[in-house]
Amino acid sequence: EHDDYLKPHEAAVRFSIIDEIELVNVADAKHLWVGENATKRVLDEITRIVNPAAYPLPAFIAL
Image (cartoon, rainbow, N blue to C red):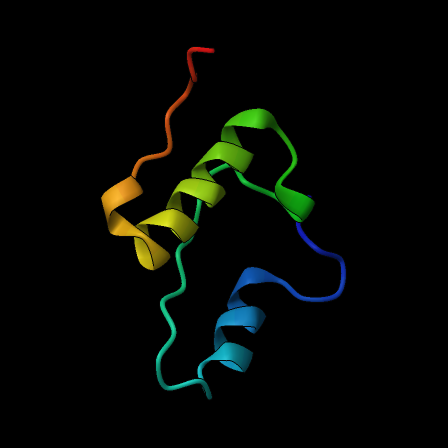
């Protein structure tokens, strides 16, 4: 389920007032980033924008 108060289309309309915004629709990612795959995808998208050299985030880190 998506957010009960702000559906994806409505969110796009509301956020359209921000000049420098990139909305990324993540398939199967729903309210509060439920699920490990969706969480990784969302964090990867944030990293792609703020630190492209670190994109994508590693799946594992050797200790």
